[in-house]
Length: 340
Ligand code: AHG
Ligand code: MN
Ligand code: MN
Image (cartoon, rainbow, N blue to C red; front, side, top):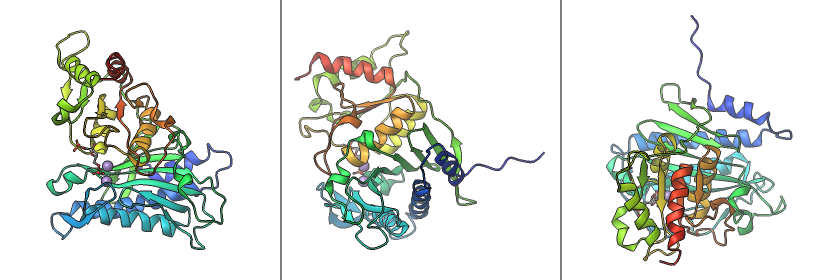
């Protein structure tokens, strides 16, 4: 019997491209470039304990957060790959205060811009726990031939052309969507290829995992507190009590819930009235993937994340995402105490 060869990321994106009538293959090539940077970061993450890459970079980023060496390494690896692809006109990254416009001859006419969190879950780097990279791709709105500006990045999430993440976990995976479903590829390190492993992920409508940093409990809105109580109560019919799982890397927490069914919540808190997570390069791409898998993503008050009009590059937003029925239930509690 002839064993079927695994389908690679490259093959699948070429097939997908044929669904878009006027596609010139640029997005496919861009995703391939992105996959190369992902493999470079994967390599580094895998030997992190052996090379001088763990620890602080002695720098504070625009969020006031301490940068780790891997944050900086991943940021540079992805930016270099986008810059050299000739397909990207600029990047907004968690690690850079301002947008980076590629104004050289190779890129100034390019039609895509990218928002990214090059290394998500920084606090888990030094302790061998899953981390990730999140990306979101838009068509620029400014005319080609000029450097891109902030407005090119301040587009609603509904305008995303593609989005995804790489999870550096027990295996490395790339999960992405171009609006035709959410698909996952697992890196086979022996051949250095991302191979199709999760075709058209369909996230459960009901789940039994809730993911939230309960250390902030006293600072949560009343609706979140009451929803957590609901999750912890016993009820056979609805399979409660639910189980609590929180890694502290959005990518890893979301990925688990996407496959198993669950709800991730990072609400506004007393110290962080806008929440903690960033709209452009954390919430919007994850929201696109969630919706394409049949899940939902809102601010907890019925507003779809992808319809929030961004006003600044590093804007934060309260974030609720995951299984549809769990999110609807959490929002019922939120609606009861809208001002508490
Ligand atoms: P980053 O490492 O890119 O700064 O992101 C960390 C984020 C996210 O991954 C995670 O869900 C959240 O911060 C965890 O925050 P808490 O430590 O406040 O729970
Ligand atoms: Mn992050
Ligand atoms: Mn980060």
